Amino acid sequence: MTSKELTEDAYALAEEMLAEPLPRRWAHSLGVAERARSLRPVLGADAELLEAAAILHDVGYSPGIAHTGFHPLDGARFLRERGFNEHVVRLVAHHSCALLEAEERGLRAELADSFPTEQPHLMDALIYCDMTTTPHGKPTTSDERVSEIVGRYGPDTIVGRFIQRAAPEIHAAVSRVRGQLASA
Image (cartoon, rainbow, N blue to C red; front, side):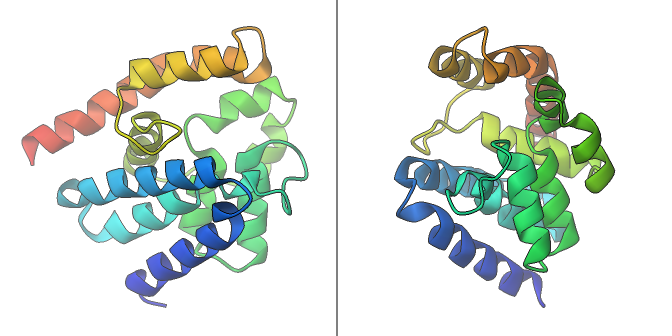
């Protein structure tokens, strides 16, 4: 499969799984994929791979596959079962500091044992794309995005606690990617 075919398949699958049941999640995923396209100058050969992961990163929210309630794990399992590219599967599994949320949910060992992490520059790139895109698919800052997530879920919820713990790494990844873009 070519990288272009991978990306085309990713868009088709994400649309099938998210567009109708979760239109806001679909809008967010489209925005994240658009951000991924903006990173082409710094990603080179990995650009299509990142875009495929970006459009699929939240597929685990789809009602038909949301088994554990932890969307990175549910999405990665689904994609692996479908025979998707393993790099995409691992990026989906670990997107946006997912290990920290998995720890909050008692699923850290399950996630870490089932899905090795991906190359750090790709992990940073996906964090950048996800954490600088609003739930409606519009650009934002990582500070605003973290605040929005805490506000939406509450500071004392699993997601609220996780995102507050992850915030320093999220901001650092965004900063690293912005530095790469500035140097390109």
